[in-house]
Length: 293
Image (cartoon, rainbow, N blue to C red):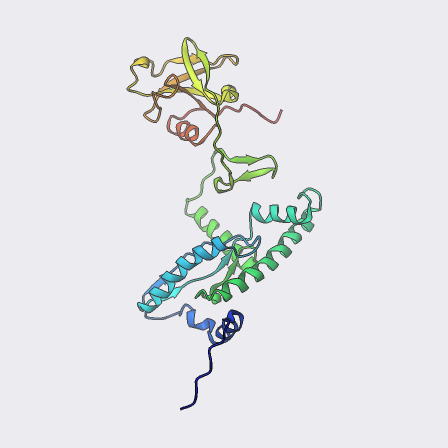
């Protein structure tokens, strides 16, 4: 019998990975149009291509890959696409950090070109990393959100929703970043725990406790718990806001914590998400503490 090749003393992962990548075929994972198999489509969350494909990305994609492979073995026609979210602040901020500029330091088109160049290069690096990790991705359904073929479909979907009456326009608070000079999503807001003090104001004899005294000018109501006997019969009455002199109603709401402070809280436009909820639920007016003037 011929002798088997001796095992190498050291595992050469680069050689092994390269050899298997040449054997595996992308089409083994393609979604088969017109197949009679039951379909299983994975709505893959597209990452921001602002750097390397890091360990957190890899960890999340492992979960997705497990499901995709399992479903294929169970006889499903699986679509496991890969997308790249090229829009939004992460790309702009990365370009500003890379070139030590702000978006206002260069012409608009030049800044857009810089964002595109950075994105294309990062997509290539991240794509190569994902291939080396052997994720069973359907690369025939790769999409890049900054390409016309993709955002054209997005625009078409908005037009269809508008024609169907599924889009409306209204006032709603946003998170505004003074550094980026634009509105940002809640996912892009960083929070930190801090120790603060309760501040007390007297509204026509009723003590109001708040951690946000700077929002006094934007107060539009005072909320109390409906079961709080200290404020029995007060619902619907009006109070005068100290210093600013405008009148606001007292409203009852079960979200108020009677044990917090005096049990009576300001509703301002806007201090936090709870303010937004109360503003909507009770149909309160919008009062700006700071305007353009």
